Length: 256
Image 1 (cartoon, rainbow, N blue to C red):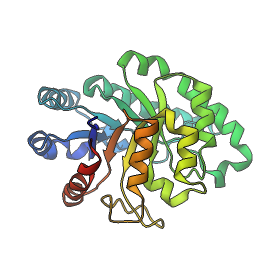
Image 2: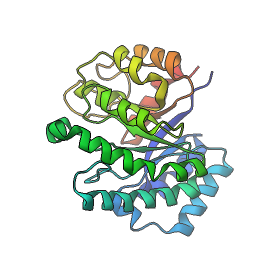
Image 3: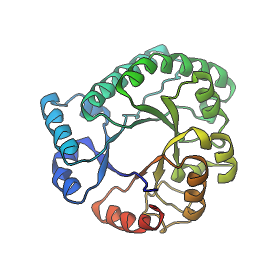
Image 4: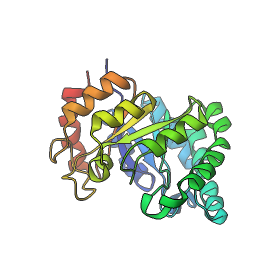
């Protein structure tokens, strides 16, 4: 089996990196921060998407996330989140991504006693987007951020109960915040994983190192992906070309 490998590319730099991506046959995960969504020239994005597709490249998208929260208790925050996510889905109509990754917005420190209220709001929020995701043929991937264990994401995914809403497992965030072993996380959420974010750290900061340069056991990770989610997209989250090239070299042993 050949893994589908993607690489993080901020939309404001897509024009700069377009030739590099095509020349090196790298599938992009295009990240749209909020400010970029307000400045998208849709005709230009359409041309960029056409160039990527003509080169045989596949895409995924990472949605805006700063200050946004689909399960917020404040309805005005949910409204702002909805506006941004609608813009992301507009971009998806052109890029035709396999997966769109979204942050869930849950933080135990803020929502611990209001966990079920947050969950209800989040379930209602995502139900609105299921028909659009289904129509576009893409998967909504809910990424773990501050989650210490998988139960909140599992409850959300199981409550929605739709093949187009799944989990994006971020191994770097898992290594920073988890209270459970990776095997336990996968035993709960492995069958729901549509994408994995691949980057390394030492467990103290979100360093976004190339795999093998921190303390994460990638032999274990890819073994679990083979077992539970062999068709999952793997996206390298490296924030410089130099780190990306080191990561692409390191991931080769896991591609087949």
